[in-house]
Amino acid sequence: MKAPDLVRITLGVLCLFGLIAATATILLPFLPSTIWAITLVLATWPVLRRLQTAFGGRRSSAVAVMTLLLLAIVVAPFGLAVATILRNTDRIVSIATAVTSAEIPPAPDWVANLPLVGGLASDTWDSLASEGANALLAEAKPYVGRVTQSFVAVAGSLGVVFVQLLLTIAVSAVLYANGEAAASAAVRFGHRIAGTRGHEAVLLAGQAIRGVALGVVVTAIAQSVLGGLGLLIAGVPFAGILTAVMLMLCLIQIGPLLALAPAVGWLFYTGATGWAVALMLWTAVVMALEHVIRPILIRKGAKLPLLLILVGVFGGLLAFGLIGLFAGPTLLAVSYTLLNAWLAEETPNADQT
Image (cartoon, rainbow, N blue to C red; front, top):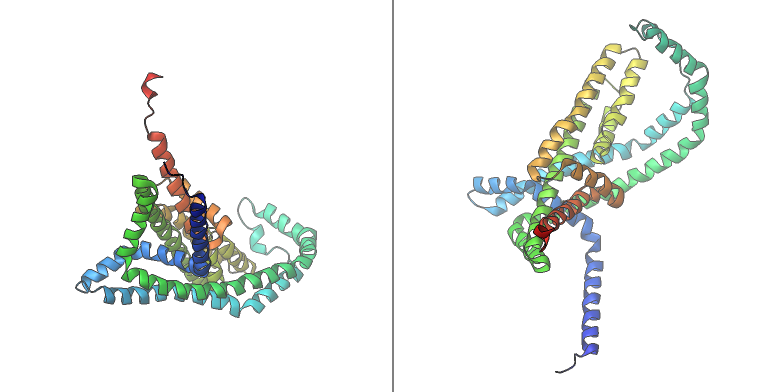
């Protein structure tokens, strides 16, 4: 038997790894946009198919409409949010600085008249105003500069994200036009790597991405729109800025409370008690949406434990940034399914133990 040519095999492996590394280096700048594009296309593919049917089977017309819809629904709101934050950065910094130098006034008369808790609330308010809160604000003042500088840096990076979104739409258009070929290649690759399990893993990954895209993104947009509408009707200043911040907070799964709670406090502070109570109730409704809409939409995309999806969202966000919103649940979903399939396999001596 002829001995294997180790030199030739080694050189072949090195050349293969070199080719993979060079290809990855070239494609790396496009990786975030490609991942976002795959997410958008998977989430909206049924809509494309319906449009194609409506246009008499013409894929090009459906792709053009879907691209315009993505520009209007995805890029436009995000662009407005980024532009609003960047345009008002100086104002946000000045507001943060003003808060640290503000004096808390005595409790209004209506606080003492509240049933059951009025006396305690009024005494606590006056105590904080006279000593506790003002001293705390004075101690916090040196840190405002650092916080606002960090905010400006984040706002600047959002402009880069906006440019990537435009590239995402372009990649999405290409995937819309050749979606079946791309899906077939992914399935063949999965089957080549791990047989039937690889095939199922690729399909599950697509379902997980679609479920998270529907559950996380649609819920965030719905909460931001409704929350911003409440701010506008209540007459809260800087409603546009707060809505933009709310959208970012909802996307990263913090929720709208950090944007709505200060508005409620401001309304109470200015004496608009009726509007403050109304906005407080509306805030509760907006926050409850994520517990109603998100589970339903996620389950429509992938039949996986909701806890698994949420852990993937938070963990992916911490590990990979915004892209981790979709990469995290996808990786956990694939790992979870493969683990279950492995545990379900019968062992030779299972019935004898």
